[in-house]
Length: 434
Image (cartoon, rainbow, N blue to C red):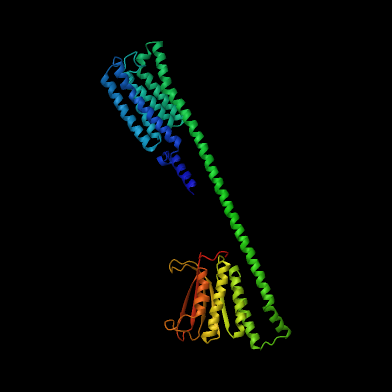
């Protein structure tokens, strides 16, 4: 799922030390990065303003101070560009930023005159404070503390000429140290608290999503269980109906044969037994399908109904899908009845074959049918080009199957018999109430 994939990707990035892509950054992280960039740009702009308003009397060399400022500014601009592009502060970028700040503090402090190292004459101090903020955003508490210590030492070494002047200068240096280190530490604590709060909120959201997914899975499982129970109930009911049919049809004639009350040589009895045998075969081949059992019952009834006409019907039913609606079963039974009536009236033969087969969709053959029924005979047939389709085929067969979304194809030839093929595609529309 999407949540799992995102979590896995985040875990890999966390282990590798790589920040997540900008598109995956949470809103809080993006907002903090924007604030950091804005603050640092203001800090970089502080020294030129101080020089323009306060002069250069506190510097040993304006050229040297400008060089330190320019080098540090270029580094800061590069850092901010990388941070803004990724909407995050990579640890390697934070380390580079802090290292440049350490060197700039040392060099910039040495370029200030004694007594001016704690004021705005220092060319590296404002941007170095921003480096402490970058460290607070990206590094662990232990690594950040090490870099804070390095920044403080570099600052004190750079302005040692000022610090050695006495208590007043020392207090100014202490105030700058508090800003240089204390402000990033406080900012780091706030950032970590906000991140923890956001992580807890995101974790709660993920847990809520997981709970919703589990509930949906449970609902789906319950629906499936209900469907299976309904299918099993229908199957049991259909079996009970078939058992009653067997009790009322097949068993009496077998019982009559056992008791000698029925003449086994009587052609009508033999024809009845053949029909019953076909019925039993159909039940065996369709025992796993409720719809198959229903079709077996319908076609067995047709065979018995047409037995007095002398027509023998061989039936084969297999792999009937369970999603065939009852209206489709009734339409098929009615269409098969009319097709068999046509065999009796026009074929000149006394034998017909009825085949019902369930079909899976096959992309190679482009056959979307889920059920195919054929009624075939080897009678005289007819030439479709010379003989108009008979009324029974046109209305009773085609209309019945067409009403449930199926199709009918008739294949015949003079002296070649006739095959009526009915197909019902999966998902075909059926009349309301099906």
